[in-house]
Length: 237
Image (cartoon, rainbow, N blue to C red; front, top):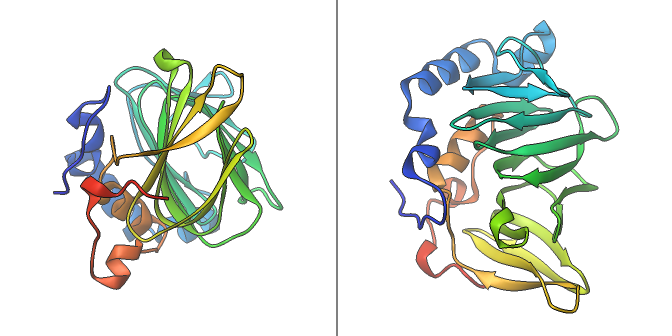
């Protein structure tokens, strides 16, 4: 189990991949042909729903399908794991986000995170972004963790766990090329402009990324290379 620092989260939220309910759901998902099977058979693309969630203001059921254009909200002590196109998402509790449509109904062009936190793995593609109140991240094939700290003025945390990401906050811009966790804070300054600052790896684990990648037939950069960096000091970008 990889080590992780916690800020405002608890171990239970990060260890969802160890739950028996998720392991059973993931096994059933794989046995049914994973995402390709879901698309071909018009079955649900929700891998697991624990607790309460809504889609477009209506209560979400585990047998429904989520699609681009939906606004999705998880409640307290809830978690939602699903896949759209070649990407997989894990929404933590008390999270609200919109997945906006790209060139097709199964292509996510933009993930707009309004509150909370999400772990996401993205297959190869272009012209896709993650947007928070203080940060825009242009992503390609990558695995990332994004969180908004509403009690700190909507401060955004973003970790490029692996892949290539173009980060923009106000007039501040950085290109992050990571094989093992490069993280930033995006804060709103006293001048009303957001800016980037290096951060440590917090509130997410390697195993979360690995399980999400597996759901859509992918592997993380460290699984492919067979080696990891030092997560405790992974703070350059």
